[in-house]
Image 1 (cartoon, rainbow, N blue to C red):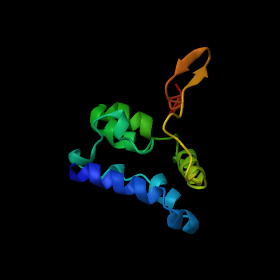
Image 2 (tube, helix red, strand yellow):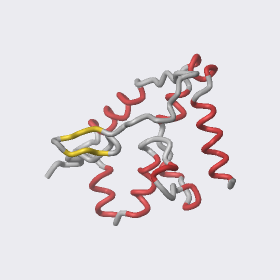
Image 3 (tube, rainbow, N blue to C red):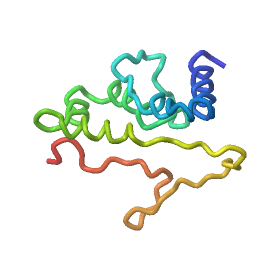
Image 4 (tube, rainbow, N blue to C red):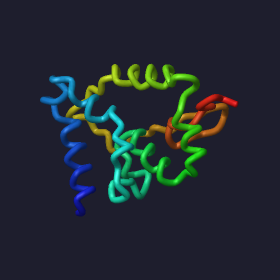
Length: 129
């Protein structure tokens, strides 16, 4: 197991810790983006490695042309809506359930008659042009 895998396993362990949940730290660990300071070694190699949706941010920044990334990552005018959305998601807290079998969770959803394996997809973003 390499250093990144060990780090991810440790973060998963911490996120499920009842001590962090009681202190309210688990959402802060998971909810903050550090895409600005990510090196190539920290980029995820596959979807299975992602711990949260913010893990895709660093990968998108690395793979997309700068103009496309700038369009997707920015908001309109002063980015007030973008900041408000980030702040709103920081108010969500995860309450891990212990001693519950989660080995066969189905996260797929039907959206407009089409089945998606994951409920995460891009709606119109940025300036919505």
